[in-house]
Amino acid sequence: MDYLRDPDAIYRRSFEIIRSEADFSSLPADAEPIATRIVHACGMPEVATDLRISPDFVKAAQTALAAGKLVLVDAEMVRHGIIEKNLNVICTLNDPKAREIGIASGTTRSAAAVGLWREHLGGSIIVIGNAPTALFALIEMIDAGAPKPAAVVAFPVGFVGAAESKDELHGNPRGIPYATLLGRRGGSAMAASVINALMRGSQ
Picture: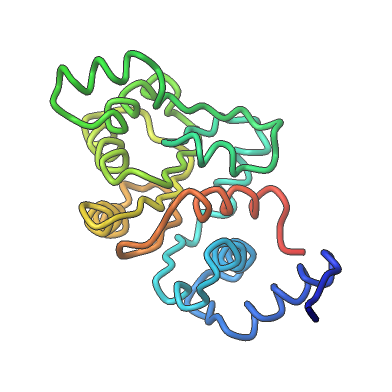
């Protein structure tokens, strides 16, 4: 079979296609490398029109990463998708306390796991690539007076609550820089790609 085999050539051609097919004109100029990698992660140039990245997101997130701030993620798939292994990434989803709190309070384990972030929230980077209830729980914590993170990467996915949770963040970001994809689409690969783009830039 005749197909492109050279990994560097595949990589270059992929990004050439993305730049020719995706419209990033509504995004901040410094966010284009992030948007490019999000499209690369999902194979859908059309998601570019639903991306929302605040003007202050890239600078705030890169500053936090450079300072060694924590990266708090809602799912192990997000953690494993982050290429840079020297980052301090925390996932509390499998902490036994999350299950206990979820059962006791009648909420999802993902939302309960977010409650375990409270002492780490200030100045951190939040990356949500799975559960809408995690994003809702984060917003509720901040509204209740929890310390604000440096930036939020919000890509929960699904048919129940995903669009609504992201609409809430986009409509009122509480003064927090953010990147999100409106609607039902999202997922761990896209969420992790944002951190990868921030660490590596566009190549």
